[in-house]
Amino acid sequence: MQGEIEAALRTVFSRAVRVSASGRTDAGVHALGQVASFDVDDGTDLDRLRASLNALSGRGISVVSLEPVNDGFDPRRDACARSYRYWILNRRAPSPFLADRAWHIVAPLDWTAMAACAELLAGEHDFSAFRAADCEAAHARRRVMQSRWLDYGGGGDPDAGLLDAAAAGRDAALLGAAVAHPDGEALGSMDGSATESPAGGRLAVPGHEPRVKASNAPVAGVGGASPHAGVGASKGGAGGGLRCYEIRATAYLKQMVRIIVGTMAEVGLGRMSVQDFQKLLDSGGRADAGRTAPACGLTLFRVEYPGADDQAAR
Image 1 (cartoon, one colour):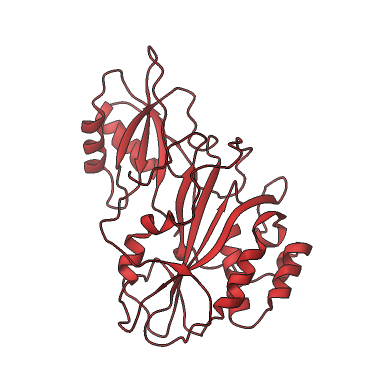
Image 2 (cartoon, helix red, strand yellow; image 1 turned 180 degrees about the vertical axis):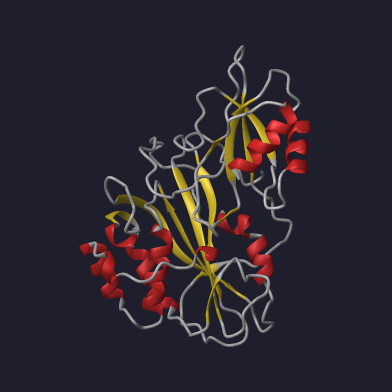
């Protein structure tokens, strides 16, 4: 994303413009919202600039808004919380709509056990068992404010609600999600592969060269299915079976969410117990945890900034 936006800005301004992106994701990971900041000339028409960037950027990028911010705005370090969602399609038939958006697991999953695992993660823990071997974070303690499974069902029609749920996930993400860190405290170092997305800008400082926040956060135009707390075992039949794991934390370790989901899937398949999952959280042994879930199912959903207004209407 950064390279494409910088190339587009070079075309618009006929000079190099450095883009400070809010974070990175592993290859294959998606984001409903991304943010970057860069300097523009005084008097720049931001609406025209947005149109130009969309015309010059690839189809995988949509610049939804450009907002002036002060010179000190840092889209990466100013965030106080971020949410991810990981989608699993648990049924026999694959979905062409979700082929690169969800992990397709055919065998029935025990969602009650997986929901119990999710509840164990709330609070501050040492997540050493759930980080990549090459993670360079100084420590593995992270604070999780929300951890849960959501059920999007799907009904008798094999694809009913699946595409809508994926497209309207922006609305679904707001259920039960707080706007900002309850303490309003600032983040420390963003270790690993955590990624941020926009949650609100600040006014440009008068008399200074304005910095612009470029938001890539597509707004869903579909109603979508309503999520419910994921409990019970999936029948693994032809229809239904779309679930997603939602986690909200101050910061993440490299591949932390994907390893958590991969390990919970092992519990759901009966290869591990909820007690085994608890022991992993207590012991920090990565070798005993599950596989790293495929990147395609992971989506960066929301990033929050101290004092920012709720962005549900954006």
